[in-house]
Image (cartoon, rainbow, N blue to C red; front, top):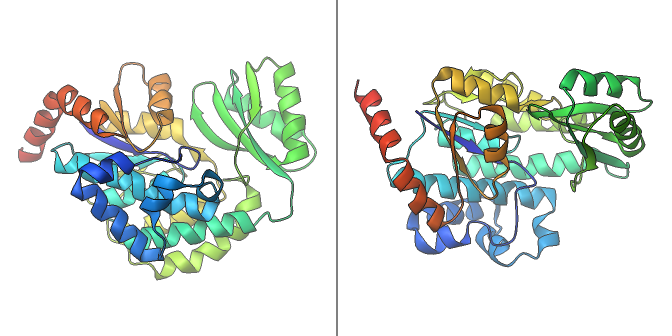
Length: 318
């Protein structure tokens, strides 16, 4: 069975989604609807940039959501539909759109505010995120707790890959200790805020009333949530988890394993980049994994997934 997985902030780049929108009306309609919702031409932003504008968090989040859902809409139109979904951080909103729990226009409006609130929560504060490779999460968490200042585990991405975030000095100190303990790498990430840490609590508080006012439906398919690593379909639970997600760690490795436990054997990364595909392969070497970002990727996926699509259709009929 097929699970769609959707990337989060950091996957964006100028040019993303453009070839799909130029070729497929389903993708173009997604960009048009998303752009109208926030009065910003997201396709033009993706096509032309400039990169520094696309990288502004309140622009990145709606642009990436629109791009990823545009690609997923094309996949679905070509008979490749998910039985399960999940998304990394921002990507969880795309997963909820794919699951029918959240309308695209509402999702785009929410994530634009989400991006703004996350950036403003640490305005004027020197912060950082860093990827730590080669150590388990308990070791990384233990070092974070020993360091003076705010530094916390933000993402548990795959075996031996953990992201930490917080105040820049504390992150730098933690990285130095982790290298001394044998981390293969402990490197800063090019992001603008310490996402998924306690420093985002102010952003979560501001987002809560926004999410309270947004119509949500029960999801038509299970969406595995970042905060718990467990499937959710109930609308009210989804709302609560989206608020919590802002300042809580992303349990991506657990989410991938849970998708597999539910029956997912094929993972399709719908969106720019191949980061999630790599994380899934590290976590589940036996899984079939594809990334779809361009028309050529779609053609390749249709050939590879013909058997999986047929099997899912048979399961649905049964």
